[in-house]
Image (tube, rainbow, N blue to C red; front, side, top):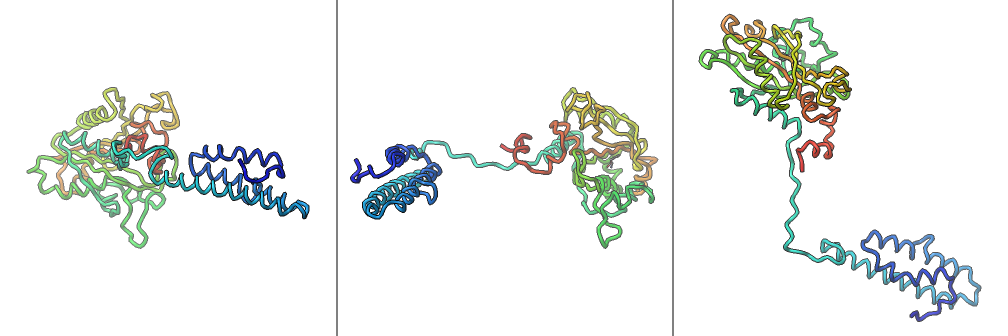
Length: 360
Ligand code: PHE
């Protein structure tokens, strides 16, 4: 087959040469071809390199004859490799393997679609749960005044939450801060709607948004997180209205089997105040890291609006009463989706987001 005499070469070289056509044919892509190229014609350790060593070491009178054979062999390999490379490159450009052809009847690839983040989806769901109950959506700024974040909420001058250890104040703006909860929206909405309260017959709103606290990042804390504030103002409103509303909302959110409990608690802007826990879905109440062994997870603070909050906004607490609640969105999302670490919501790992069903 060969027009030159291979008997001058070592048997491993002649063996390699015999295998070359088959090995070349077996290269299905450019990666495989590059590996073969390395083995036959690479600078170091290749069969070509071995041949050059052999040529160098050959006795003077053999050099000429041997050189002819070696050059012929090398150029045969090189030109065959080049031809195969052109073939594979053409196949890749055509969008398939060497053997596949363009098929115009195939459906087009579906472009990847974006989706709402799981936290935004949960907030949107909460809005939908409360909308049929007559709640509309309110928003407030994330950079707030002390007046809205603390004063209007009956939070005393010496309350620890006002300190720089807990709250981000804006450098150079003594009374501006990053809101530490969504409750300042209560103050804004009450002040705005106070004049029309009689005409409207009451107030009902939900206020989702970001809040900020100087917390260290861990599986259940982040210096930025989300809350959904809820508020209702009417006449003769009591704790039973609050409990009925929240029990309804939790069933809508977690399913009919949702287990909740209320514990007395204290917030300066409500009286009486309470916290609501849900049975930990991660461990079904047996106790785990997320519920810190208790079987319950606190997801919101609530209570009846303190008369001072109404008064501050210009509303007469002798006529009007109401309730308010502030729900932790990450906490709730962790419970709904059984996610054990809040940080997953902020890392934007596509695998997690896909798992949450937001992307496909
Ligand atoms: N603002 C409170 C918090 O951030 C929650 C709350 C809202 C409590 C409304 C009572 C009423 O913890």
